[in-house]
Length: 186
Ligand SMILES: [Zn+2]
Image (cartoon, rainbow, N blue to C red):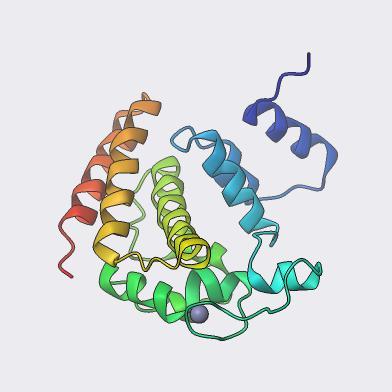
């Protein structure tokens, strides 16, 4: 029986492909459970099934965003749609919609240099994941997920993920950011 592991996949991709500086943010991050790592990998490879990608593959008829009607590619969905913009603005990161790539999130000054790299990846992945989940609730169920629910879900994830690392600095970062997300004033 073939057994799959993220670490094994990381070693395989590292060995079989040209050096990918971003890969470590995904696979060498102990704070992110496996399915979230795969989510970040899809985003990194621009394979998140946005409306534009599904239209390109002739799976759906329209590439339009369910929320605003714009062309829904990955960057629109995660960074620029008004639904995502509201999350970034409430978080106090208003420059995010103007980033040229989601990867620039990893260099934002809003996450201080002292933030442990694995915690930084966990925090950013949690935000992106819950923006994606909120989008799917709207597309699949017609439900508008309010920002407070998104922030609470991010905070809960970070609290859980702290148990996945023995690095005390990473744990402290995750706890502090979890509190921050719970205390955001809407
Ligand atoms: Zn939109």
